[in-house]
Amino acid sequence: MNLLPKILLLALSVSASDPALAQQKFENLDRVDSLVAMTVGANMGEPGGPMAPVDRRLRLAACPTTPSVDGPVFGAAIVKCDALGWRIRVPLVAGGAAAASGPVARYAPAARAVPREAIVKKGDPVQLMAGNAAFSVSRMMVADEDGAVGQTIRVREDKKSAPILAQVVEMGIVRIPGFNNF
Image (cartoon, rainbow, N blue to C red; front, side):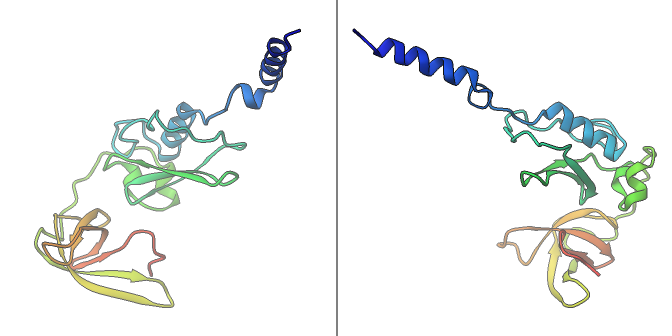
């Protein structure tokens, strides 16, 4: 008697009855797009809204709770699932209420973008700063592009070095994103 077909049939029926094996669940990226739009107060493509939908090639594990959305932070919304430990960055369109920082701007209706004057010009020497209340470090760099207060621009030490993204603080001073700056 040939038992192989019976064993294969039994294995297939067991795997089909186990939902974890039969279908792996991924995060609903449409839900992530909606959460980002609601948090920043602007729809996709609008000033302050997401630049584009979340990349559909992503296969994020389904978050057991609603993912949290922080931002805008340096031109992007940060979507994260604390329960599973994943985090993604969603770039935002410049301008609008989402371009401002702070909790009030997050819920403010989209405002008409007001052009800001660039106080750092391409080629200007700038002081790159990082630190917090306990320490600070700085280094002289050169701006690769124009920037107004609050904008993120590229700076570099010299023409051969790789660029670094920094946020314009005031004339001649930029800060590294992600540090608890003063």
